[in-house]
Amino acid sequence: MRRFIGTLIFIALPFLVSCGGNSNTPSIQAAASANVFSSTVGTSAAGASDPATTGAKNVLPVRVQTPNYDINRALISVTVCVPGTSECETVHNVMVDTGSVGLRLQRSALKHPERFAAMPGPGANALAECYRFVSSAAWGIVTRADVRLAAIQASSIPIQIVDEASVSYADHQRPDSCLKGGKPTSNGTLGIAAVSLNDCRDPCFISLKTPRYYECTADGCAPVARPVAANFRVVHPIAALPSDNNGYVLDVQPVPESGAIATRGTLTLGIGTRSNNALDVTNVVDLAPDGTFTTVWNGQSYSASYFDTGTEQYYFATSPADARECGSHWCATPEAKFSATLKGQTTDATANFRVGDSASLVRSGKGAFRNVAIIARKDSRAFVWGMPFFIGRKVFVRLTDGSSGSGNAYYAFSDAVFP
Image 1 (cartoon, rainbow, N blue to C red):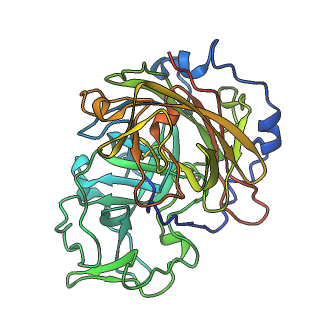
Image 2: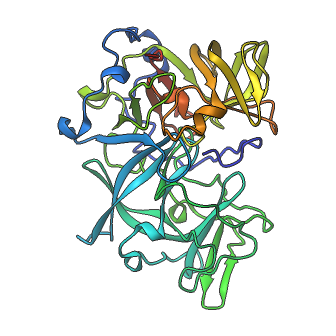
């Protein structure tokens, strides 16, 4: 879920030694020279093993379905603990979001939210955050937690506990300057964007009209009116791990043209750090510092394109020849087949995709689709490669902090499987 569709925000971060400088991270050149990953025989997306039986310490099971009312939600389970203790609980149905940064859990999803107190902010008062999305905002305290992904733990990292009631959280009432939250579609968000290792760009000072971080007392919450240092910001949960922290692999099984109730996959931590995350695909797109690239398709160049599992459909403005407008969607009957060129900073790739009868599919009651698309009416520069892109593909995402010498973040992916 990109923070702002139409106004793409670069959230740069201070350099984290544990990520981006890993000597095991395959370079873009290595990705481009790897063996071709066949999309017709033995693809991981088509035949991914059940992660529950692999026993791999760096693999999380993923299920793509409709948790509440939205389609195409990639969901995992995350364990959080009070730092340094055995007071832990596992939160299920947390959405994997490649368009944001940070772990944000719904307070209602925690059995014991009182265990996770707000951490002190720069002024020693309780720290809270208003993290803005397209039409709503996540409001809640920032706390420290030990976060366990698969069998790997990041110790005492800042996360957000979201109060979806839009009213108050103990003494931390939502201020008027923070937009109301929308109805939650999952129990939280695992934000793992490629180009940001925490959720606020240096020097991390947002205007007082749209503040990000607040400090709270019994009298209410006020914006932090100075730059917020990195140790107070919500961090990238994979980059904060002690190992397998240079990227990840999202591998989702394909679905038929008519969709499926759900589909399975895996989220494997690290790239080139173990035998189960070796880079074995050749389609590579390296990203600009703000996470974007250019999509060339249908006679247009979309210069503000990006990948985003939190966007449940493809999102583009120009009508293709084989599709038509149907309400807010693009529709094609039978399913239309397309191919686009994705132009990165130094590498280009080709991506095949399909568009079906989107309006009918999203009303079908199923939860996983490869071919649904919505009309971009607000930003003609953006082509959003949403969750349908990831279904039936194996996708490697290399992380970077955007600093000089850290290299470009990249997406490397297999050809899609369309059964």
